[in-house]
Image (cartoon, rainbow, N blue to C red; front, side):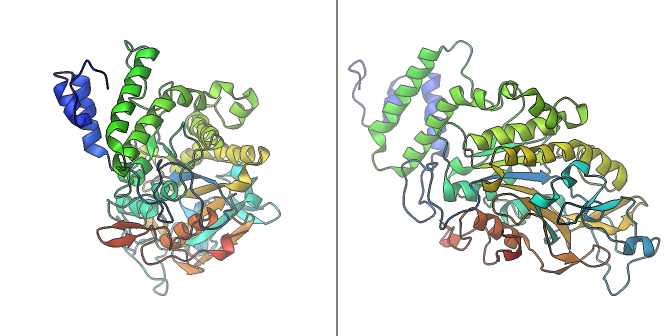
Length: 479
């Protein structure tokens, strides 16, 4: 340490002795506030850098995940699960034998609303896709449709927490956090877990959807926005030059090193500051879409108003996973209800708009990954918090339905051209090969080479895991 300063026994003592420098006080506050650090890896072994790549439990099929979340609840019987019986029973209530469950805004006594969408079979697999998704239909043979999904809540936020973390309450680590905790990252210059929300706002569940909760904070999702500064508070102040910025960073590193020793918590927080410093140089290149070809930009729909935003974020997601980012979540919907899939008033008007935003970009993403040889080890997940009811709300809309709905997987070891599970003739209840949220998560972890029963973290005297005490891998979804 420089002889210009009296010898201090610790970094904090040095900062307090240094006088009224606000920068030192702020740094001390940041370090004290959230340094929680490196914990045991997926197999219990401590690691110097908590984001360093770790070995999976067994040979994985997928190395990375692009997690597409449709905020609000798409209608399964208007997209991927045709139900002719809806037309036969139009204007009548559901039969007693099916059950008439209440939802958030309906009693179960409402009359059935038939779908007006046109379904066709696509690809060699003959998968059913409606006219709302014509571009995605061309990728049918790469998709594994899971028609028998179910969850336990009819309210948006709790259902979102369940789909993201396996619990209906806040305070539990998200799927992305568990994945990065278990596998780390192969890129030391970008976050392991990135979250790309819709510009109008985040989902109703908010930040807990990508929280690391009781896992070390380095595994929390990093919000990225459109534009030249996708990560807030990353760019140095305008009056701070590169040399000054570097010297400040090196000083912090020296102070950390002088005290850390075997302090795993401080080592972890140090790693997060190192990542932030590296990102100042590497993040701008990762988000520079100008480097993409005109043909690629057109394929993702960047030249059309309806698809420009979601297409931009999907193209950014591809660039991030291409550079080693482990988990990327992209939201369709957020903020005002008019920008969500929550079709209470008019399912056709809502889904025509929302599908118009995502259909072309998602198809472009799947084809782009496949053309680059990345789809085979990139798992693309299309999901939501729940589906919609067969009975109507207000004559043209549909309410929330957690009892049976469709999600899908593509690439990353999922069995393309396959449909798993069925719902009853009205699309209300899952009846065959039921897939709970725990099963869904166990399957995603399995494709990544992680055993959901072994991926645990000691918290409050209990070995917690993403799937709690449940979860079975959906074998029929595996290639």
